[in-house]
Length: 116
Image 1 (cartoon, rainbow, N blue to C red):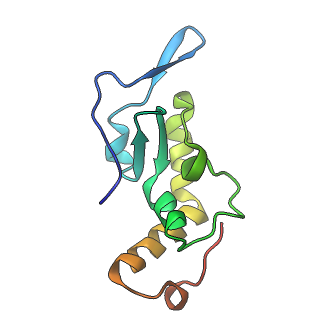
Image 2 (tube, rainbow, N blue to C red):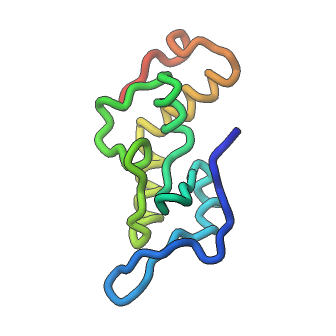
């Protein structure tokens, strides 16, 4: 299983000034961890959210939980925020922890119990 990445034409929109901002399908290619929730018109980080749901990592000290529990939908700043999240220590630890988990390695011996 992986991130939900539906192709909608068009995606739901949100008013922003005199424009309607929408999630862009092309973002999936650049940020393959994006997990789009159709019902809320928000995105999450598949790796981070899954790692927290499986209790592989702890989200308690994470500064910004938009991609883990709240959902992100400020499309005007999408690319900027996606890049910041992707480079975050928390995201990188979640990616590593989830890969280890899928391979059946003990997280405690590979990277330890991770926090943001």
